[in-house]
Image 1: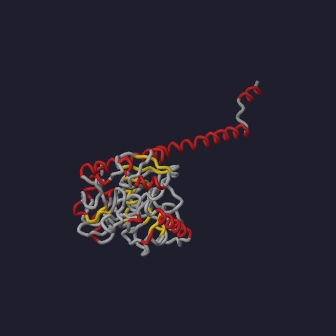
Image 2: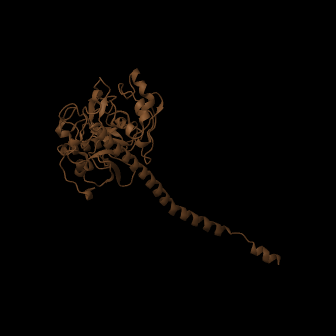
Image 3: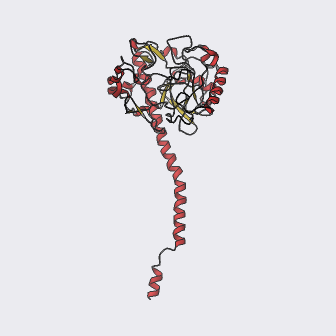
Length: 366
């Protein structure tokens, strides 16, 4: 009788326990990709929602002011360094009126002289609508030890290497640009709705980019490599060859030059600037402005043309990148958001970036 009770209450053998553990491990390995996929789907949905807010904010701003927002220098100074971004102009349209009211637009937005510190609290505020949860937050500090706020959505100047609209013949061909001093914030240097002859549903306003990796010792796709020369030999303010599709041949040559420079980069900040998208306040390439010269996540790094080892106040490519598989999200001037595939033809990308190119684009082309 005792022998039967002992047999009845016998526990698992070691082999049985290992089999159970193996089955659980297999189930976890099958479930984990699904969980990760669900999490990325949620992050992507939030990213799309953020872009939707920005797209609608642009449409509402234009309706209220009669023009799209531009980047502006602090009046009466007309300089591009420390200028205010389109994102800053839109704060009141994305439920961030308190931050907008805290900005002193008569003072430069970037840390510099003593007066600029008036804006420290406002411009170091992290704005959720400017952050894609799929992209890591920026590292390091800004404005005297404040955490960098980050910015994953650039305002597109179009299919153009230039971003300055108030100087020279090579004005950007997109929705946004640097418009000069801010004496007339509503319309000076800004694009009007009548200028968008391609239609608001065919013209990109905002696109995604990955925050820089803040590691100058290695080249990442979102880092900005010093390429040095300018396509077509134009001056700093550009000429028509700086815009696509007119400058297509020169662009390809320049991108190949940039790729070759990336492979031999010394790993210093002069050669490889890795702080892309660290802030939303400054109306300059790499900070808040970008362009659509290539499809998302191209084989080329971002590139800049300057030769004096300064900031990003010069021509270059600061384009679409994302952590979403297969492409990146873009917002259009009508407030819609669409997914642009990595495989999209570059001429289709240029057509979507320009406001008045006259192209006819079918929905199945991207």
